[in-house]
Every structure is written in structure tokens, then in C-alpha cells.
Length: 229
Image (cartoon, rainbow, N blue to C red):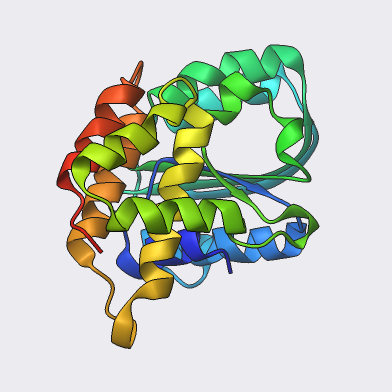
């Protein structure tokens, strides 16, 4: 399982929307495991706040139905989970979904499964935590792992200089946050990660997915507050 989503499942701390790319079976398994935790229910098919469907083409009508569903309160508990396997999006539906994923009803979580991240237009993709396991890629590249390791060891002044390359790219910033989280967890001694650092990264990710975030301020705050590891 992808280390980022695995961490969110283990800590029961989720973002509102995930884009799962790659093998459909693996992605479905991850989404269902997350849904079990969110809904605290083993038999998802009988849960009124769980929705799962496959779409060859996700069009405008489907977008409207999703918007209607997303704005309804949960019938049981405080969460709802929508899992969809989508082969492709129409251009109209992708644009219509922007607001849905930008301002979801509290407690509503989406897991959208696609064959490739390229299936989703960049503006819509930026609303998701992207879990890209297509092509059996490594969790993070060696270059990203090295950068994250150096960032965590550096003093705040050097960190802020390193973070400048991400100021104008929200997608790369999200990948950098994922890399930091994976690096912290994989390098933790005795399997006890620095939970303060992980909490700071989680907060940074939440701010990043807010409407019109200041990436520069988020990364500067990260540089100043992350403990040296």
C-alpha cells in the first residue's frame, strides 16, 4: 500500500479528496480500507453513507448527481465516502467538479480511481492528494528522498532557500509534502516517527488544499516549525 495513504489510515486523519492512479484492484483495496476506517463499518455495501460505482465516462449528469450527494448530511455518524472508478472525464464535468472538491461538505471524503493522473485536468488534479502507483513507481524518487532528507536536517534559513523552488507550483508542493512524510516515517528509529513533525506536515497539506492558498507562506511556516530530524 502507498505509504502516504497507509499513514492516513493508521492515524485516522484524512484529507477530503484522493486521486488514486494505477492498478484498479490495488487502488480499490486502498479506498475501501480507508472507507472502513472512516465509516467504522466492515460491510460497506450496506452502509447508507458509502457510494461506489464505475464510470466509463464521467459526464455532466454524473457531476450534478455527485454535487447533490456531496451536499447531503450523513445518515449515520459524521462521515460519508464516495469511491468511483473513472476511465475518463468529459471536459465539462471536470470543470463542474472543481467547486465540489474545493469546498466539500464537512465529513465528505472522495476516492477517485483512474488509470493515470493524466486522465484528470491539472486544475482538478490540484484539488486532490495524488496517490500515483502507476507503472509500479517507487514511493518517492531518489532525488526527492535526498531533498527531503537534506531539508529535515537543515536550519530554517537553508530550508527556506530550498523551498523557493516550490513557491509557484502547488502540485510539486503536494509531492514535496508527501516526500517529507514518507522520509520521516521510513527513517524513524524503532518505528516511532516524530509525530509533531507529521502533524505539522498534515496541517500544511490541509492549508495547501484550501481555496487560494499561499504556497510561499505554507512552505516558510514549514521551514520554521518542522523539528530538525
